[in-house]
View 1 (cartoon, helix red, strand yellow):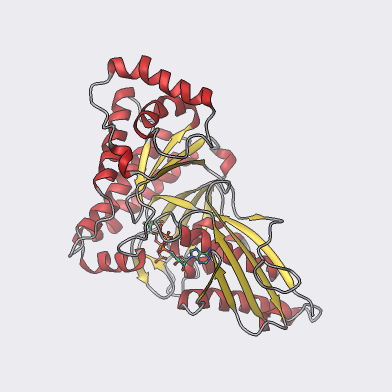
View 2: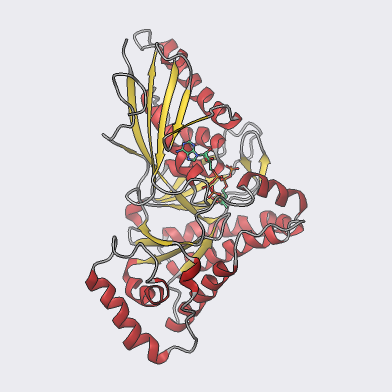
Length: 397
Ligand SMILES: Nc1ncnc2c1ncn2[C@@H]1O[C@H](COP(=O)(O)OP(=O)(O)OP(=O)(O)O)[C@@H](O)[C@H]1O
Ligand SMILES: C[C@@](O)(CCOP(=O)(O)OP(=O)(O)O)CC(=O)O
């Protein structure tokens, strides 16, 4: 009996205007629109292979080599929506194999820690939905498909696009207008880079879903954020991206990270995602921008202590003069930079920074950082020849 197989990779996205709060928990409808940058898949990606056949006896998911439950309401909703679309297609074309009635085998691998605040659920659900949509040969646009990924994990809808992405919150009760759209392509602003300082790769304390429910229910500041702060910032950030205005983009990004974490602190009891090391990194970024009298770096933090720093390629040496000095003992440098690059960072620090520097760099900061990941803006989910499923048995390789 035929086994049909498809594989896809999907990216991580890191929000520059944060999604925090749901107006509908079941449909994952947000209380505000958000914006993110999609990151390159060479460094952080989910690879998902899906197979379907009349012979499979049940839906099954293997995540990072382990059989996982597919029971969660969110995954079930994604599978149901995809099957409904496939079923419509089959109704109009009797030559199509009736895949909507068959079970699925899903095998997925993240090349980075799962559930550690590195947006694994975003890449994970984007890859799952994109792979099944391809297997089913669905003609729907990426925005339409993003509505399905959104039900898996809100931020996953933004991982259906490359470059710079908005998730428009929409206003319909059924979520039909709550979808991801492209703000600008990767090629519009290709020199955006990101350095991720992994402060903790451990599973986080308060999962995003319960954290945001708690904030919605208890924070007064949250109301101010969604009513008066984010709507204006959403327009300003789109404008900054469209005009490639890094200084504005960076300030809006940092302010929004601070605003989101302020609502966490304003929740009762409070939620703490950032830790002392995160705060030291915030301070360092402001010191770097003040040193150069120009905004060359932006920090942002998700639901965990890890820092994501956005900067432009042309400012790499200026920024890395500081970052290499502080974090050179952490792993991650050699795979991205040549010995010549690293020497240039060191030299820039010694000759341009050190003589003028008005503050002390805390050389112990690296002790609380496990590794540094260097990456940049990247494309939408990709087709791949790599397959995690044995095409003769339909089981993981
Ligand atoms: N490749 C994948 N395929 C399917 N589901 C996945 C995949 N990777 C992660 N997930 C789901 O996402 C969950 C982790 O999501 P969670 O929101 O807790 O962490 P995170 O995405 O790393 O953090 P955050 O979204 O707050 O940045 C996993 O437990 C799993 O259910
Ligand atoms: C802080 C954030 O990263 C929160 C992401 O939350 P999730 O998308 O993980 O939440 P669920 O919809 O409940 O799955 C901000 C963001 O990515 O916009």
